[in-house]
Image (cartoon, rainbow, N blue to C red):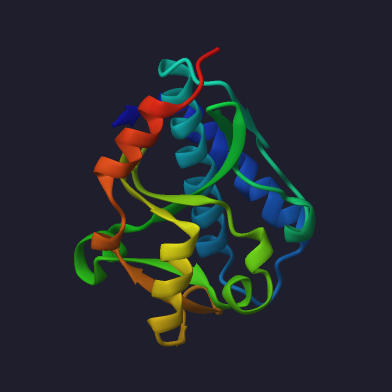
Length: 183
């Protein structure tokens, strides 16, 4: 678990508000979108801090504002000299405790599989206290999404599929972090 400062949390929430305002998210649940982007950036920052503690050799796209097409992967790091990619999926309290699942965008699964990273880490942010719940490989993720049914989010107004949280392995995440090339 990584704890971000109150200042860091406030910074990412403010940047999320600025992003939503700049991009003109009209007709959508703006408060929910602000929360989603803030959680995304908070959990990415926490993962970055974890990688720094591990002294890992890594690249991070940083705070990104713009369309999804230009975003790139969340993280890349070296293992045995080869670059691998990692995505971060932040889940809310209901997904963690009620549904015990990780949502994944329907359009990414159907038409943009080339943008799915080699591994995906599920995590949960509780006001800056970020827990890393586990990791799944791209192949395992695609297999699970292929078995999952298509759902519509009322709050996010998007189509998605879910992967059971128990498919994300904490042991595999710990193992991968230990294998990363060091700076």
